[in-house]
Amino acid sequence: MKFFTRDAAVDGGDEQTFAAQTVDISVPDDAAYMQTMTTKSVGLNDRAWKWHGKIGEIKYATSRSARTAGYATLGIYQRRADGTPGRKITGGREAKVAAMMRSQLGGHRGLIERFVTLMKVAGDAWLIRDVDDQGVHRGYDFVGAREWSRESLEALGKPNDTKDLIRNTVKGNNGQVAGSRTVKRENVLGRVWRPDPEWIDQPDSPLHALDDICEVLYLLTRGIKLKLQQRLLMSGFVFIPSEVNDARRAGPMPKADELSNQKTIDVVKQSMEFNALNPDSPLSPVPIVVVGPGDQAHNIVFSAPDREIFEVEMKLRAEAVDRILFGLDINPEGVKGTSEANHWGAWAAADDEQRINVKPDLETLCWALEVLIMNRELMDAGMTTEQINKRMVWYDLSRATAKTNVAEDTRQLHDRGAVGTPALRRNSGVDESDAPTGEDLIRMVGWAMGVPELALHNVPEADGIDWEAITRTQSGPKADSPAKESRVGPGKGSPGSPNPSDRKNDGPKRAQPG
Image 1 (cartoon, rainbow, N blue to C red):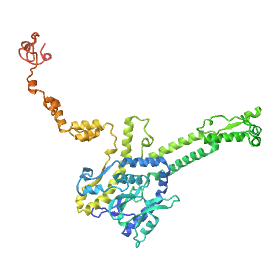
Image 2: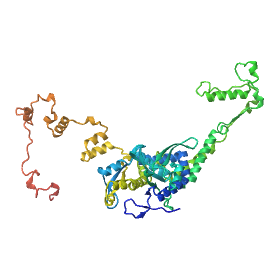
Image 3: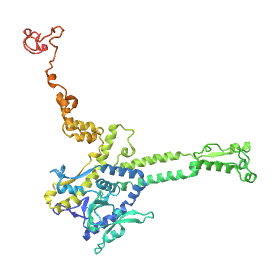
Image 4: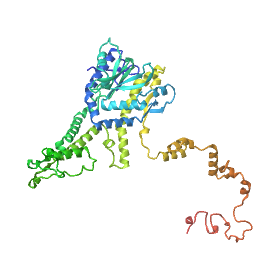
């Protein structure tokens, strides 16, 4: 297979190979590249998508990672000299480009979730510009290799064929296509993929290495299902000797024409059917009663099979699930729960899941959006290569972190002047309409300062208070008080010592010489 290279978007033309690569399928080489890579990806990932659709644990694990990544907010940041993101740019052309990094199907979250799912299952996707019928740009979307129609892939190999591409969007019940959309060739921006460790242009997916164990899990599940549907294995059987089959049922005698057909086995069958069809009827738990030869009673046998094989198969199935989750780079506790772990262990598992399973895909997404969208949009806006190189697409995943006491954290930050009062009210569950008025603030200040005039500002009942008389009030006993004069008065001599003449200095007593 040919090794394909493309010019970097803003590096001055050096030949490089990216995990995010721009294409222009109006160029024959790029059209051939898309045809080759898409056809290869379809063959590699046919069974991967089968396991994603048939095995619930795989679907939940991948969708869990995608939903976690969906909490990220995307933006354009300044690039520091060491390549790390700096301050987020919230205005200008950069902010407009960042705002358009969304999907018509779910906005920013929809774009992120679809990308992460494609990377987990197929490891390969194509970025397209989403344009409506009037040519208005609505956002972007990722397309899997299996979505492109066979006719479109065949047309890519014909230099003179310039028809629009067909994206299949609905699969019919018979496996045929039931719905599709048209994608203009100029709206195909590039390819994003997880490179295979050995073949760099070939997509890689964890499900490739897990194909055998996925098939084992699928067969185990189907085997258990088939056994549950077997009446002989689940319900057993009843053996009624022929000598008892002519016994009559207990109760009123049937009519003569019914007596010949009223076999014991028919009575048992009718009772079983009644119980199955009417489980809520009061007659359902009533036992089956028949009358027959006493020496044949012990010959009526109910036989049930041994079901221990289900326990073995369930253990094998649990082991297969664990192996698959480990192979998907997913912490099993994230899918199976952390009921046996304390809260510290649960937090550590959640942090480990983000660090290993979610953030690498988000970094790949940011690199792809930078190469395929940001660079060309800023270049079209007139920015120089040097200016563009100082920008980068990055993410903020702080919303995915569960905070146990947001109100207390906000209160601490408010006391330190780090956040405003609207944030304090919002995180404390208080409506903004409950914010204090100007009069309320004056009274709060008066209360804190101990100034009654301010604390009772604009209170009608306080209008009749003589504040001057209150301020003239002297503290201590009144002059005409009958109480005796206190014997305790102010100390005499040097302060700090009851008998200064006995001390060498004014230090504490424990520091004086003995």
